[in-house]
Length: 254
Image (cartoon, rainbow, N blue to C red; front, side):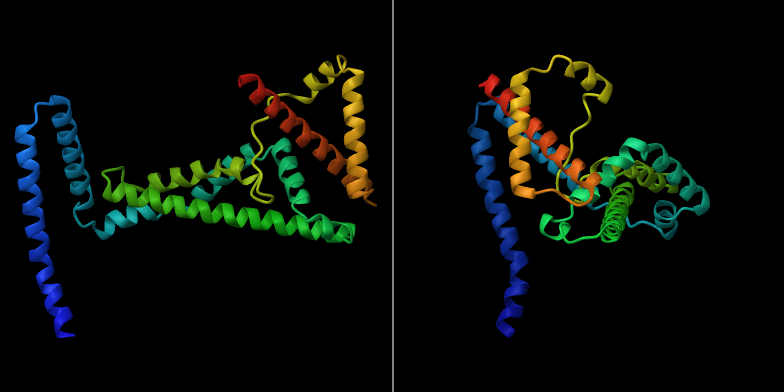
């Protein structure tokens, strides 16, 4: 125990000796160097480190600053603002995508034995879980923003936290896929355009779709819920088409 205490007392002196040794070695090498670019790089690294250290050593904040950063005086207005933001984001299309993601997150082996009521309960569970996780992420990001405002020279007032919350609400775009681990890229073709392009479909494409249909039925069978069955089949074809397109583009580039 005494030896450990002695070691702890000696540690600062050892570190200081090491520091002075490094300074002497580096100074000698710098004095011999003729590379201005290298000297400039070393200067910039040291200067940046010094500025970052100043930021870390910033003053102790006051209780009022903590209050201004992390508390919102008008909670009702803040909630109303968030509700408005979410209302603008959750349009019909987005809500439909969330529903589909909730549905497809149910494992196939469980799906076969589920009644329609069971599936509704599963959808409610997944939607609640996704919302809960999104709220947790928003809370953590807001706390991080508040900390940065206090200790990194940022803005320090209640609107900072409120803006962080409403801004994080837009992360619902990422939350669409948290139920099944997939992230769908932005939609780049509307249904109306797809219908117009379908007039140029070839027989070869129909043969490929027929093969996909046969493979899907052999692997999954037919679900008793007709709507679920057709949506699952179309999702399978859609995902296959996306992968086909991605691989074609990669092959073209190489």
